[in-house]
Structures are given as C-alpha cells and as structure tokens.
Image 1 (spheres, one colour):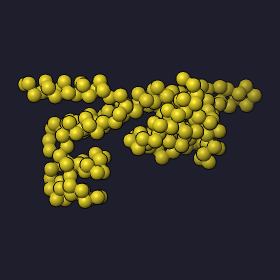
Image 2: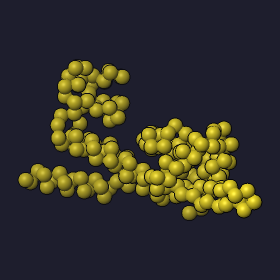
Image 3: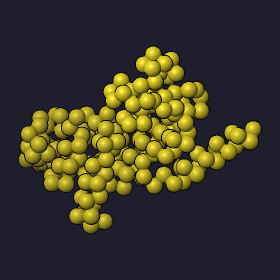
Image 4: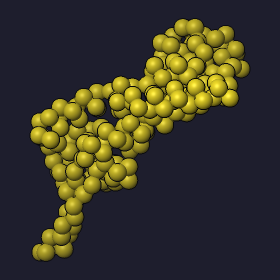
Length: 184
C-alpha cells in the first residue's frame, strides 16, 4: 500500500470517535498523537521530541499498542555506546483488525444484554451508557445528559448501530443466531 494512501486511511480511522475512545482506553491519552506521529518518525525518542512528551510516556504507549498486536519494533544496538535504538512501525491492516475486534466486543456485549434483560439507552447520546430497568425507572426514563426519552435496547437496534467497518458477515451471523433462538 502506498504511504500516502496508508496515511489517508489512518487519518480516516482516527477521525472516528469510537476508534479514538478505544485507543485512549487501551493505551492512554497520548495514544492518538503517538500513532499519528509514527508517520513522521519511527524512533521513540524522535516521536517524544516531535510531541514534546517524555520518552518514557511514548514508550509506554508504544508498548501497549505492541501488546495489542498492531505496532512492532526493530531493535538495533549502537556498537560504540552499547545503547539500543527502537524503530517502531504501525501495521495498518492489523490496526483495522484490532478496531473490528475491539468494537465488536462492545456490540457483542450490548447484543447479549439486549437478549438477557431489559436495558435502556439514550438514542441521542448513544450506547456508551446503558441503564437497567431499575436505573431507567429512577430517572423517569429520561437521559440525565440531554433529557431525551430512553429507548429499549433491542438486538435489531444494536445491529443497526454497529459501525460500518465491514461487519456484514458478523451481522449475518448474529441474524442466524437470532433465528435459531426463535425456532427453539
């Protein structure tokens, strides 16, 4: 993949609020800036200078992203000083797979909740906060943030809310699961 196409694709992915939130939850508040900086520099020290961050903070983010499997490094030793240098790379394809997996787990959890009990969410604010029936009743089925009427969390609504990240196969699988459940 040409570098400019990869940069554009990365920019598009990072513009999604759900992706940004997942990255911050996974690797901390500097994760997005570090990933964006990987296009300009590959050494952790250079990224730290570029972002005016401590090298240890950048390394922490890079190591967390490496644990998730979409960044990797090459270590070289300076024969004169004996110091190691780390050259980091982002694998855009593995990053996209991570996004799908991360977001799917959230929607899978919501889908299970929709089938296991009565839960409510704000259609305006989204499904980041889900209320049990008792909690919804305590707040008169009104969102505390925007005062919108809460909506019942149903599997069909969860499927419609799923991000457009090529989840078509997964949506078909969920529908098959639902049909099997109805036929029992």
